[in-house]
Image (tube, rainbow, N blue to C red; front, side, top):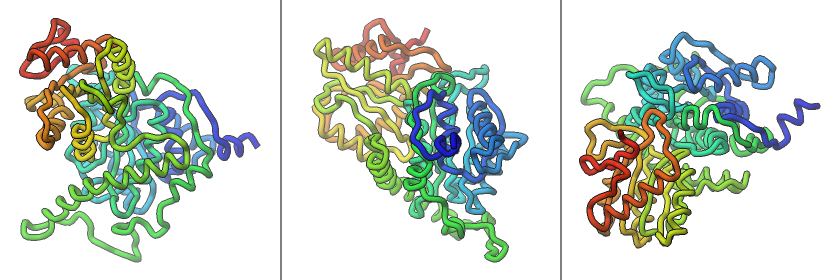
Length: 414
């Protein structure tokens, strides 16, 4: 009876971010999980192993010898039509990079959670999104989860999107190593029946474009000559990624109707309607930045926030529409990653610059980098960034709080 209640009743549990990811895989009823431990995602796989061992999760749990093999296992299992899940971090994600490309090129709806950490050398295991953003051109959808609840919900939503016959692309759900992966908060876990209604099982005959079936033999992944369809296949991934924006929005609307939690879309705005100074960032620091915006508002400064939830597909149209609708003076985009040699030093701020070029407005732009390698970013420092943004707009300079180097603000740089 207790097990039946656990599966069919809604619950609120105190979970770490990693446990929330594991519970999402359980509720999604994934068929195959491939595992290799790496800090700080290890407890995702440990929790799933406990679920499987206790008979609470009917999945094949495969212990692999490396992260490269982990994603190879995901590719092979997904080719049979199975719903697949894994998790990794940092160097592990880099090690599986070849097969990350293979999953997208094969149009396989694999979902993987990333407890993001800094890239070595030197060794670093604390939150830094440079790992997942190094995969930005692989053909995977990339989403940032800013709360423990959002980790759980995002895994479910991204299966819904990835398995849509019009999409068939893999997805990363990224969140902060240790700051989210190992801290605990209340998470609402819907009963499995409610999840089943939102996320039906995959088609029994496999994915519409591909299945490994001895009765339906096909050749897949063979060499293509330059005058064959290689370029067209690449274009179709790009075209589908752009089309995914509407599918993501519809899945989020449906999720809101079913479960009452509204993630707005590919971006989530906070007090942006009348903002003059706007901060754009991702992850848990975006959630924290609401306090910084509130603080600025109390001082009479019309500050606002945009939480970038999806990086791929990049929400260009949504951002352009927001910028056109608001009487903005200046916008700052803060990356918790580094893109060496890029125009702004950050992945997101570089892409955002192209968004500004599509608006008809003159908006002061201040790219920023903060929190690399898990360096703490306080609410006070976020307030300082907004103050720097106002000073930069008014006089082209910033105060002594942070360093403005090459047009980019380096928050907390020593």
